[in-house]
Amino acid sequence: MLLRAATRGSALALWQTNRVAELLAQTNPEVEIETVVVETTGDQNQTTPLHQMGGQGVFVKEVQAAVLNGRADFAVHSAKDLPAAATPGLVLVAIPERADPRDVLVGARWADLPAGAIIATGSVRRRAHLAHLRPDLNFAELRGNIATRLEKAADFAAIVMAKAALDRLGLTPAVVDVLPPEVLLPQVGQGALAIECRTDDAAAATLLASISNQESMNTVGAERAFLAELGAGCDLPIAAHAVMDHGEILLTGAMSSFDGTTLLRDSGRSTDGLTLGASLARCLRDDQGGGALLDQS
Image 1 (cartoon, rainbow, N blue to C red):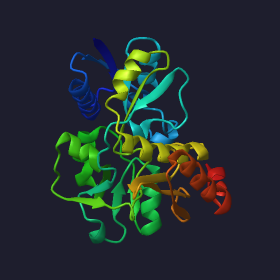
Image 2 (cartoon, one colour):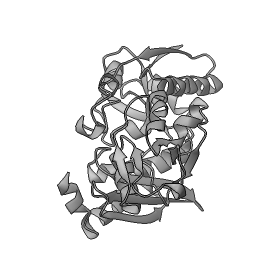
Image 3 (tube, rainbow, N blue to C red):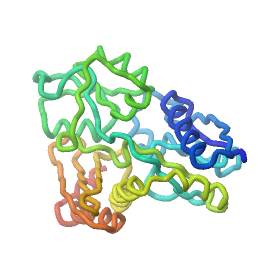
Image 4 (cartoon, rainbow, N blue to C red):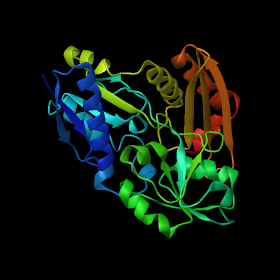
């Protein structure tokens, strides 16, 4: 059986799609995967800051369109790029086992950053949350694929990247400092892959669901429910990180002003991740003043 996988053409995206093909081969050896490379808005424009381009969704819309119009049978996304609201005609059928969701500093260690150091990142979350901890830091815009960003690292005190990206591509910069969630809470879905297919393609949905990891579905699902309740994407400084803890989902969520002067953060736990994500978001938005931060956007 042939299945066509829509994906971006970056080295990381192709690695992720190949990984999905490997997982499918383990559970369904009769399935053959053909890669359909799609150029997205985010790939076409690598200079404009992401939040000015519409934030979350700029790396997935064209990939989703390839599935909807029949060029491909399913799409492989980085879960952090996938908006929390479902796309009509598509269903999220699988999240394989998640990689490390943490961020890393490349080029310097967090504890060693001098006053006024310039940190490069294209993420408003990373910028705002780090500025909350270190108001003295300065920030520069950083766009491009993984290799391009690493080439630019020498121009700054450090750059911020996802650890999973380095791990998946086998990249080992000389100085890498892993930032724990207590320092920098990850982006919703960071480190996870999200696989979508058409809602009317039951055969593909069944095959793809066979490679899903239930723990990843539960934890990423809680994070996405948090984001969905806020109605926001990666164009706002919002973060969430969920783990399984003694049979329950432990979710930490945060939202901040763009300059990092205000940062709200709270945690909760439940066996129902979707309810937990929504209730934690309402707590930050309605009870702790987060609504005013959303209004600023």
